[in-house]
Image (cartoon, rainbow, N blue to C red):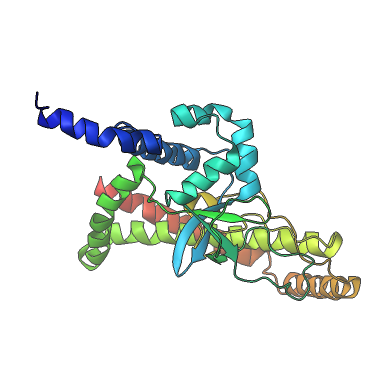
Length: 297
């Protein structure tokens, strides 16, 4: 009796399957594993427990983390490995190597590998990276950057929608009514005053801590950074001082300069009558703004 076409196909395929230790199902399993690791990578990246930073890799801003932080993170959050289903029992190094093979991660290295003058050690989080030749997971001074595009939250989608509207509104500013122009002017002046006051307080705290204790304490450390994210921009806690402690002669010199500047400002400060006139002018401006806003209503 002649065998059917499906039986002949099964007979021809079964020896190769037995020899390789595979069957018809593993290719579909491998496809599902790829999706599982993609989901695992997204969950890990969105988790706040894994510390990460932003850097420039080949003229592209990437989010990266350190190898030892990844190991400690998975040890502290083993429940995330349940996403991997059949591969949840893999070691952390094997998971990292799998993410590298699937191009979900890329191993990087710092561009600057020599100590700069006045520093005791290399930067913990370098701002510029390059691709490491060997794409193998490691925890010894190894950095890993995410290669996939992160899902944007809802507020970013709404912001991208209203941004052209805001741009158009700014372009139409010359045809606004006079009262609206005054309101915008005072609001912008207030925001500028807040920013300058924050910078002044920040510099004052830094100068006082540097002169008295020899510590470099920058509150809001990324407020002037060009490549800082919104989260990094409002980070209040100061950065860790990684530079060499300043000499006491320099601290004494700047202390004398600070005292002289304070005495000079105190000597040229306005008297009570001038401060009173300034307060009256400010009160009139606020009253004028309030009346303009009431007129609009």
